[in-house]
Image (tube, rainbow, N blue to C red; front, side, top):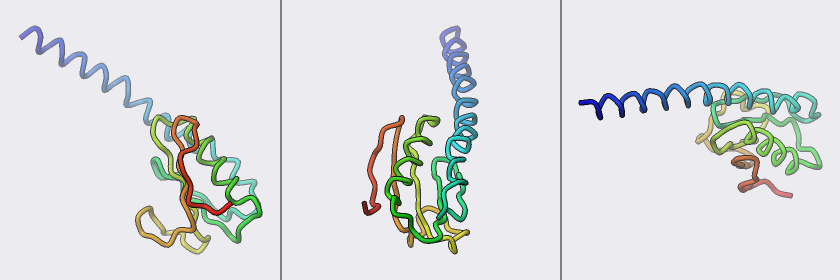
Length: 119
């Protein structure tokens, strides 16, 4: 009985420890990608959990670089893999899995993962 109580307390302690971290990471991801407001061709962007969706109005010369930078910066503040989805600005109601994206880029713990964006 004591072992059960002890393991239950440990489990509750871990849940309390990690829940605020994941909630805080969602807020800090939004803070890390605020630089997108200054990028010329970005019409809008949205943070949806581990996904960042960017609506592009035209493609800049350094399109690959902006996606790469966004993924790496966002993943620094998250304990999860972050995926940056690039879509056209007209696709405001778009969500991951619908298809029709321009490309996607991933990063985890501040390290670049992969990208389907053209250089």
